[in-house]
Image (cartoon, rainbow, N blue to C red; front, side):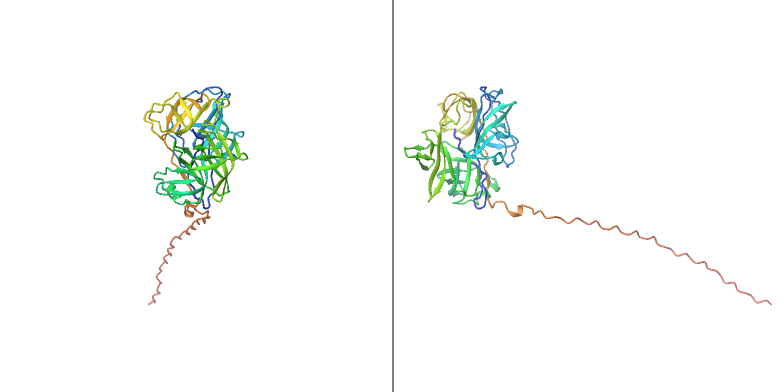
Length: 389
């Protein structure tokens, strides 16, 4: 199961990166897995819920062990990943692609890796790592097919009929720098759950499965990364995962850091239980052993009707190096990619804060004076003096 992942698209011209990447939570003690709840959260980024229905593994959590989580953020309130409500506090350590970050950097659609513990009956994150599958310049983009290539990584978007997302995607072009969050299919294609256009600060990142390995280079997707003792923190291994960061010099990837790891990014020494998001492997319909990105899954079977590249969540316990004894495997709805591109927000959509004049109430009309009827003058007959005889 790969910690590499992808996300929505933002136009590179003037847009800031909202980066992202991966979270793994450390939870529960040497206790069994925490209870996973069926959750269809609202999120503040326009995405619906996950549609997850995960079986209850073990609701007890005493803080002794931990739970490792790899999955996509689908909502907030607490942080919602794989249907789990993950709490956080001031001690939660947050990084993004190896650099210090904060909870304010979290976005719906980002893939995260973390470790959580159960405290007071709630899963509380000890660590949180935002993990982008790739960050770098776009080398090719196909608007009609909704695909693009970044640093030799094939990326597919799932925009459906979202007009706003489609319009944002159409603003991207070759040379724009983007950060992509998402999980990989068995063939290495990244299914983007978030793509953010970002300012080109010179740093590029790739995370994924080791696709080829020699004494002098490691291959991720279609990218060959040269290895040297001064840049290799941990040597990559065949079948494992690898994270590299570096710079583009004259069109070539120049690594600063190469960090290899096991296929399962947790060990039984630090984490008892896991919740892992991935896509079903090519043998999903067969009865043979289940292996997802180098992690061997035993115990539970795939849900009936699961086919290759269905999105699933595996809940279980670590059963050895790169082994998980699954208590449940759930098939969940594929998240629609959120695209945010610079220039996609039209100025007309933002109403200027123009003060309105106060309405002046009309002055009341003066009371109309009642009509004055002039008094009718008394008519007096003049007395006529009659002459006396």
